[in-house]
Amino acid sequence: MGTGLAERIAEGRAGVGDPRALVGELRRSLVLVPVADGGLWTAEFGGVRWVCGFTDEGALARFAAARGEAGRSWEFAEMRGARLLDEVVPALGAPAGVAVNIADGDGSMLFPPVVGIVPDAVAVDAGQGGVR
Image (cartoon, rainbow, N blue to C red; front, side, top):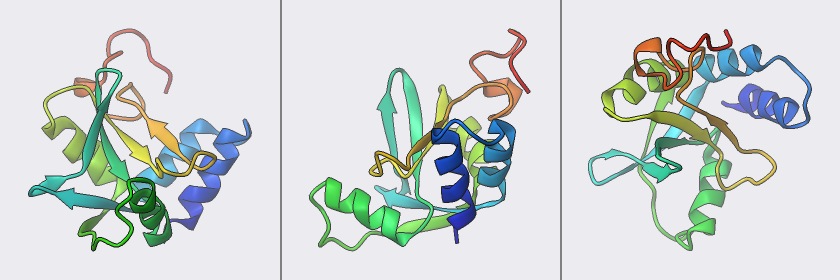
């Protein structure tokens, strides 16, 4: 699971590859999202609610270790990135995006709430001629 997405993220961070292909890879990939307090794990940063997803259990374990909670059992949902972008993000009712592998400094990637990533109806730049 997820190796294609992790490879696309590495390409994007290196400045190579097609950003649209990276978004497409997220949409096709299964992503692990921790579950907390009856909902998906999110964090707020910069006025955006970020759904935190991971490409595999190793990336989730690194996140747990970074939080000092490596010994804890983590419940998670496994879902396609397309469902996160098309259903979960709009349901949050505020500017929201997806943050992948946030504990991996060199392997993390943010998918912000902009046209071409999330539905236009919830994109913060809708009507501004965003890149597609």
